[in-house]
Length: 428
Ligand code: HEM
Image: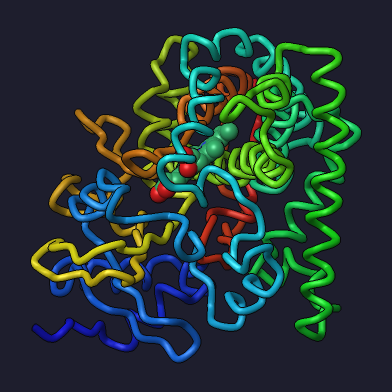
């Protein structure tokens, strides 16, 4: 059977950072794919071909089958051919993974490593950090109110709060936050020119490899010190859990150790910032929604779940087939590469009534912004809790809020969301 090949403009859109920034036209292309070619091959000159998976049900099917759809075989996030060659040249063993963390692992390592911290991130345990998060939320609200009557909510508020929370519960002291932020940005690089000044200077592959080695070495040395400290002086933070964990009766090897800290440090901020800003945008656009949720008694759960669906901060992850698999009426061959497009799944007409409406009253919101299956987001309960606490602290302190300019989205294929959200507000 011949493989269905996606129209050029659909294949080009899903790898184009500016398409994720423009947002609406991308949705039209994804809706076309869901209706006409829910599993189609995207062929682009710059990238190896991959199956674009757009339907909710097919993405769930891939997620629940990690034995046949692996994370670790090829980079987990879409990479072009040059980027992949660079990453392979820069990595020990040439596996192309600059770090080795949960998202790059498969069985049997993945579960062994995941179980080390999974319990820590469960709702009943997170209660121990609730008060601390509330303090950070209150500081954030005071900061916002101190800005006067207008601010860029994405840049001035949403970008900082989740970073402060994750660093705090990870155990990185406040004075090291700028270093952590810089290292993450250097490592993952951003495709958005406004957020990517530092990368312009890199002119050659050799220079890029040298820079990556430098950044990874810096990360590893930072976390080696943190590990030594937490072994000597355990505290109630995640660093203590990771530092004192054992794998196969020994301490976690250096590369995996740094990978563990890094995934926790990096997965938890831009993502939660994006869904927080996404919630605020809808509140600023719709006064009735704001009036309803600013009531201190109003249950915020529906608002938060819908804001996560609506913004879908993690826009895709990749998988590789280990063997031939039938999926959605197509035969996926061993070695094929697949893009799980979460943006598409979260607007799937087969699952969400009126998917392009923001509706906090959905009876059963089956959003899959956190993924599904073995790799489902480790921090999902934390993300919801952070958003809830910020909304509880912020909304009753405001009398009115409205848009004060055009919002703008990040140019990125991977983690997206608002980079600008100008709002005007009146304190209560
Ligand atoms: C994995 C989304 C917040 C930590 C993931 C995945 C997604 C995701 C889609 C991967 C699923 C897949 O493999 O397809 C999000 C969203 C967030 C968020 C939308 C906020 C709204 C957080 C937070 C943390 C976190 C606050 C804090 C530690 C992780 C980790 C993984 C992960 C460690 C890897 C899990 C594994 O591979 O086993 N997240 N995330 N995330 N997330 Fe989140």
